[in-house]
Image (cartoon, rainbow, N blue to C red; front, side, top):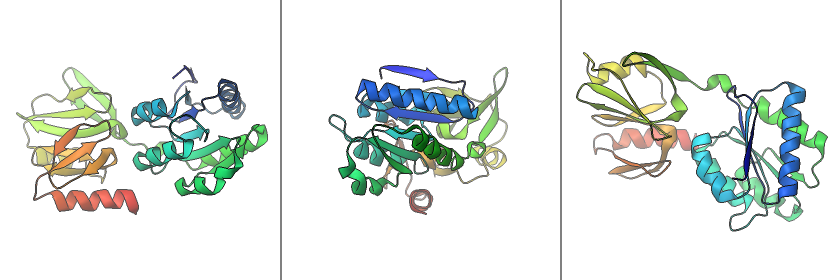
Amino acid sequence: MEYKDMIEDSGLRIAICDDDKTDRDKVNALVLEYLKEKNVRAKVRVFDHPDTLIEECQHFRPHIYVLDIVMPMVTGIQAARELRWNQPDAQIIFATSESSYALESFDVNPINYILKPIDKEKLFSTLDLAISRVDISNEKSISIKIKGGMQTLHLDEILYIEYRNHVVSYHMDDGEIISTPTLRIGFAEYLNENHKGKEFVRCHESIVVNIAAIDKLTKTDITLRGGEQIPVTKSRYSEVMDSYMDYRFV
């Protein structure tokens, strides 16, 4: 990643990727101009290579992507396929000098396909549409007891929750582990009190996984985004599979 430009974060996240510095700078400047003109607060990150985009956006998880198509090694469409797998609700905008990819691009359901040189009004109207489809308020959080106080966690950033020795530990996608004090209640009761939604499913007697964090599921293991593996028991595999399929394809 060559640089980062940020406006104070209120939840909305935008990623721009283009290997051409001149085009990259122009798109970034237009996006920042749009945010200022519309008085929209967001965090914007700019990438010069699709590999870096894919790696870092596992954690950054933008709501909106503005992608060039013709880039080295991995095309914008190939990158979008991988990003779409982990973020089915992300809004994708292609900005490219090549019109020949228009038909192929619809495979990843982009919100628009804009030819370079980028027309300001066309980009602005596309961003209007993209933002209208993003529901920041739907990003849920939970406040948990920790030693010395309370801490708020965004559910989207939790990979899995583990129970061990009467302590519940939240494994976050940035590698941090946040633990509760010793509990007087069991894991099932804790989950019933704190996680009644459908975002998590129990894959093991002592582990609950965030369905949105599952990258691959087998009958014995779950591979999470980022590559970490956790076990799934035979008795819970069907429930995990049903929840996973509902999330991916319904």
